[in-house]
Length: 214
Image (cartoon, rainbow, N blue to C red; front, side, top):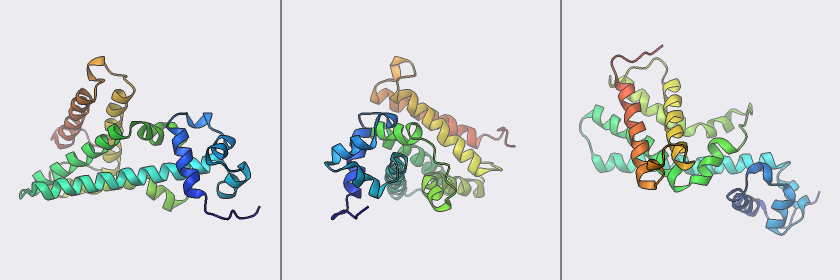
C-alpha cells in the first residue's frame, strides 16, 4: 500500500471524532470515516489497521486533554488560595481535582461518555499506553498520598481509594448527563449541586476516623 502524499492522520481523527459526537462507536464503519475525509477506505487503513485502533488513539487524545485540564485547574486553584495550613491545602487540592473532573465532563458531555463508557476497554499489555490511560488516576493518588502522609486521612491502599473516588464521582456525573436521577437535578446548575454533594460525601468518608479500611 503506497504512502499518501500528505499526513492524513490528524484529519482522520478529527473527522472520526465529529462522527462520534453524533453516532455510537458501533454505528461507525471505516467507509463512513473515509467518506467524511473525502478519501478512499484504503487510505484510512494505511494509518489504522481497524476502527478500534483509531478509536483508541482518539480516546487517549481526549483523556490527555482531560488530564491537562484537571492538572491546570487544580494548580490555578492552589496558587489562588495560597493556604498556609498544609492539611487544608491538601484538602482543597483533593476537592479541586474532583471538581475539575466534573467540570470537564459537564463541559464535554458526549466526549466524557465516550471515553468513560462507550469505547471498548483497552486490555493492552503496553505499560506506556496504560500509564496514559491512568495518568489522571495517578495524579489524584499523589494528592491522596500526601493527605495520608499529613495525617489528614487513613488509607492502606491509596490506589484503591482513588479509583473508588473517581468511580463514585463519575456515577454522579453520569446520573446527571443521562438524566438517571430525579428531574430536579437534570439542569446544569442543579447538576453541579448534585455532584458537589457526592464530592462532599467522598471527602467526609476519606477523613472519617471510623471508616473501614481493609
